[in-house]
Image 1 (spheres, rainbow, N blue to C red):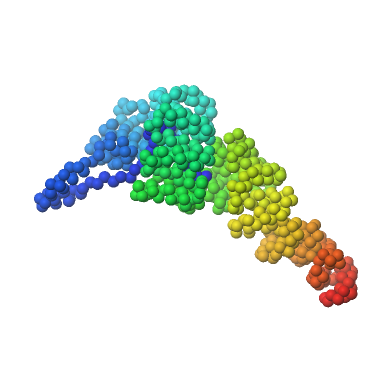
Image 2 (image 1 turned 30 degrees about the horizontal axis):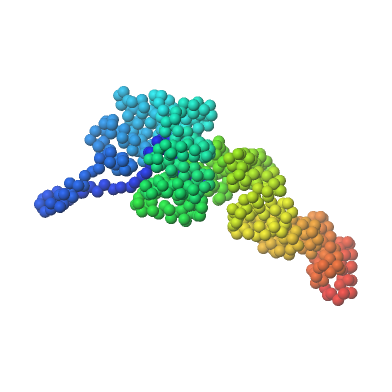
Length: 581
């Protein structure tokens, strides 16, 4: 999961580009000293005349909102009730991403006598971008009916999953550029990327000068997994605005998907040089740096972000899952109403983890299976890699492993060295009796954490035994420390070896089990395994020297008449065949 950028419901030609520029203002004390000395040259005077503070129009034309805010704040000191100045200040804060500051100014404007009711709509837009759709709707409803109010309420209806209102406001949209951009944004947020792309392409054909539409089209192609196409379209905008944090970020996301996190970070270095490090103040970039670095500083940056960007919560869930903090992950998703494939998948994974960790918790496993099936069977996801993985997970939970393999085999080439994939693929192979392939696949897993889990050890031991290499299974047990899990592994080895005719190692396993728990069934298993080993020796399928070990194992039960009989027969044969005790 990673954050690319958000489709704005604003005009396509108002694409945000943040520049960190410093206004070089000479120190007043130095000017005074220069005048006192009378040493200023004509060249210096000329330079001072040229060093004029840019006006607001110039700053806005350059999208230098930081500079515009500084200028407007300075003017505000002269007249705190200048409505026009406050309107522009709120506008700049909004476009600089400081929606809380913009909201405070609109609240101040609304407190004036006879305020413009449109401020309510603007305040609603601030609430919306702060991740508060209900508050946004309440504020917008107090303003006048206008296209902006309709667009804002349209988006609020989507965020609050009110389908009735969504259709109501959808019908009120016109063919204007702003309304069509708003519709495309909703298509995008509902994962209807092709529909969004069609709108953006049509608008781009009609308005070639709106270069930012290239970014929106590139974003859609990125979501559709056409990363190379996305990069090609994006370059049109980057050639004109190489310091656009949004565009550079999207380029880095494409690179991340095509290569890795280090390559993605390299794309951001150019932006760092242009901004002087100010790019790190952008939540979007901070969020993605966490992703590019494999979750580094996730707990520092992601929790304060909440749902803005929306992937922040999902990536925090992933972080908790990777660190086995399933409870924390569940707290983040338990009240989440999924609307995107990623949300369905993550919620399914969390429920699956809880269901597998809690014995007898079938409700969680059933919920997980349903979520995976919803994604895997959907028309938009059924032929995607995540969609096929979801169907594999669904059938895995239903224990229909033949079907699991059908879906995993279709995407295997995309996961050549992926431990998670090899884990699921190997276990599914073993579950259908293809133990040779299962052993080869499970052996590819590199993570020591996975290789030390009981589930891995148990399946690996079974594969060894079924492939006629019971000695490796026994050595696997010998490397384990005494625990409940090693006891279960010992039981598996004893029973599987007995079933497959590997009686020598079955006898060893039953001997240890009998020592740990003197239950009669373990003694019976031990006797049967020892007799089976003796029979294998007679048939030439087992080394004759193994008889000494078998006799030693049985000697511990010398007070049992049946054991005594077995020992007499074995010792007699050994004596006749020149085998010493």
